[in-house]
Amino acid sequence: MLPLPATELTTKTCVPCEGGVPRYTAEQAAEQVAALPGWRLTHDATRIRRDLTFRDFRGAIRFLNNVAALAEREGHHPDLHLERYRTAWVEIFTHAVGGLSENDFILAAKIDALLPPGGQAT
Image (cartoon, rainbow, N blue to C red; front, side):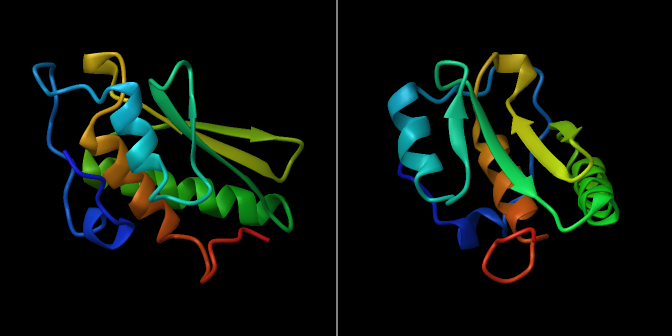
């Protein structure tokens, strides 16, 4: 399994997962997350996370609402967090496999596409 570039990940669609999908090893996850600047591995390489700071509360909420709509379309739901009124972070993993699958990286790449050019929130 080779790491896919973000441009290729965004052309894919998350597939429903009730288990039985291959879970990424820590090495595979590290290779794939390297193709998604701004994301990092957490929880012993079983989750990915991105932290963003927005100009204001409305910008942060708008972003989280856009991520929620995307997650509904993809049928893959991340953990969304808002702290200190303008700091948002997103954490993704595949619950059914207890770690990372291709769906997580597809969703991360599509979340990045919601950001302004350059990938910066502020």
